[in-house]
Image (cartoon, rainbow, N blue to C red):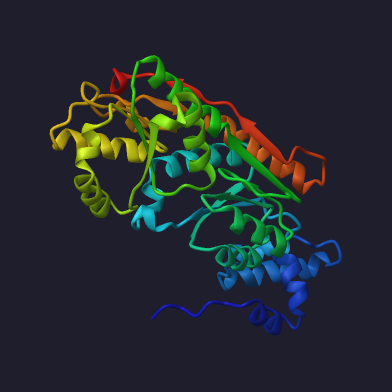
Length: 332
């Protein structure tokens, strides 16, 4: 049978001390505790093999050195949120920066902002990085907590103790639209699972570069099985176009696979471009033309801004990073 966990109360009762005194020794706050008492407590802690919980240690400190990273556990990931390449690469870059500052990263999936509030209230976190939520969620968090946080891939209006770190989504879409226009394409489709926020900015940018009158928007289901069924229903529309811009590499790569399996040649019949430049873009055939964002720079700025917020320093509330078109074989 597993041995019952030793509690601070048990140590205090055995030594005839207060729980506050024992707790102070455990957490290194011995300025007002005599050397003799400190040694007695430490000896009994070792004898009883007392192991303090990480939570109690961190909560006792003024700064926990924990950065909480919350990822929207959205249905579109179909239970594989942290397997998503963009999410995984973002976490990798954030981990590098957080460790470089001598801090710890705590990752948590959440389906709504209330889960973030509940979790953040349990830990003495130094700050939060929030990934993949919508504007309303960010506004809700801003209104219900004082912990500084960074919006990693969206936008929060009226930021207060918040920094928006975004990329130039409009220009990224514009660069793809301009590429298709220069190539002589006459009709194109934008593929997205919504027409809001970041995706809408990318679509609007594409329309400006290519021409709104020659662009159709195809709002696709999030789940792959339903999405491919939708593509099969729209098969004739693919015969009427020669170019597709997907607002994410995930949807672009998925579409290339569908087209390859359904009699279309990429880029001979249809050129395809995506957005984000995830590593898989160079692994598929044909390699995907896409819009690159600097994930390492984004993570670096995110952690730097959290420190500025934590120290109540004046800082920019919205930072927009540039993007770069990367041409590969999927657009000829």
